[in-house]
Length: 316
Length: 296
Image (cartoon, rainbow over all chains, first blue to last red; front, side, top):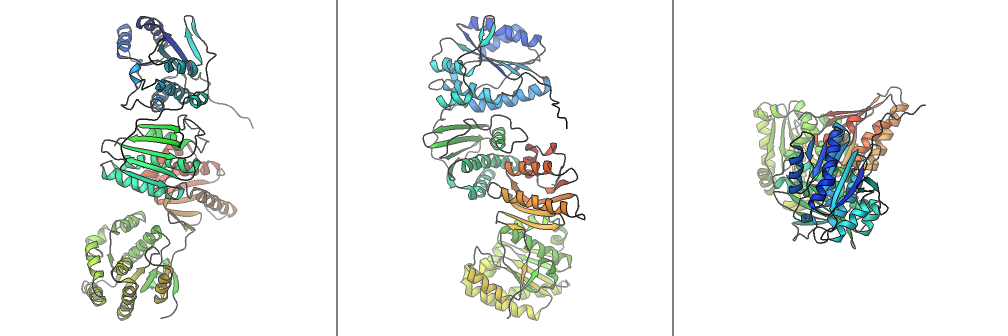
């Protein structure tokens, strides 16, 4: 039997960090990357501060090949892994239609949170979520940010550093697992008392589903959407009792404009960022959380001394 | 009264006063829907005393592709609403007897050849007057139906409301117990045979029972491969499958991919919710998997 690989090899993720000393310096480094991408006939996707975005559009005008990538958002400091999952979804579609894509992003201190670790989490998650996509990604950071963590994280997460003559190998680069072991994904802001709490094991998953579904339907979620959210909750809950200690706790905050679910167990994570990499069709495992990420507006996993937590938010 | 004779569900027409002891909710709806549709098919009038359960019986009837709209419109199928059922069961045994007699007379007056009764009497009577009232009801019913051979009654005794001793007592006062054998029933999921190389799944598949499903699927395939007369399609009727988790759906897709090229896995009556999970798990790309969605 002859086995042939029918897939044409395409270049996978190139992840470059660039540092700038001023807005002027930033544009001098950034604009040539956009020019090069467009010259290759590739789509160029950007996620930049408003002033930089304006400068890019001033330079190139409104071109069909120039696109905006999902910006950071959220009043709880944002979830780097949620943003990475959303961008991966956008870029997967783009690369499927157009092939390799050039991406340029920029640090924005508005999303630093209290220590800047949002950016470390984001870039580690991007390394995982985009690993199989033909994306040329350059992230710009100020040389002197408010939080030193921003630069430290950038130096560990990026395999390449941008120099005047182009990208060069970065000896400080570390794999996402190592980066996240040193600086785990941060806990999101505390919420008030939940509307519902329930301890469950593997044999009560059906009760968790029934409780969540009843509640979603009572708050005006459509049937299909409620069923999809129940599936997402079920997958995360299943993971908690499968890999954890056998018992887990679900808390639910009910609101007509978006339910929040938090599931915690006493286990530790084998994969610090589950469900970010698109599952291979032959893999039975790992698909549940990936699908849950597609179905929720945000899904944030973080560890602490008591075990593993997952917070999901799902709008109607 | 003698020992109960067990009857398969196919023998429904022979039964006048029978009981069923359901293994699970899905079993209960399966038997109740069979009782109703058998009565409708025979041309009898069917009266169901509901206690917030009519929706579930109707759902199972529609999954069984039994059309009841016409029967509801022309009065062949009557659902006694929850409030009326509860107030009837709160009354004395004599007054319950009068209600049943009234139903029998009404059926004859309207010209129906027979009457089939079913509903939520057991739990209701237990709530109102304990096991004593249940026994009194059964004695009254036995007497009544002996005098009216065209009327039939299906009683059910769930283990949720009756302990083992009570279930045994009820079993012995009914001449006939209806049984419908299941391949598997863990109260979350019920699997029954629906033909050669065909099984029907009712309920939910999740982390707690996924491995059993896989084992059963492989055993069904195995016996089909060993038999020359068995069809080359292994059919799973999923009309009553209400939930499947991601690993369960991936399991179905993988099972089909591992089938020998001569065989296919055919999923019929698949509900939209289950179709969406299968779609997300690669079902459209599995060549030996056929997904037949249910009509809305």
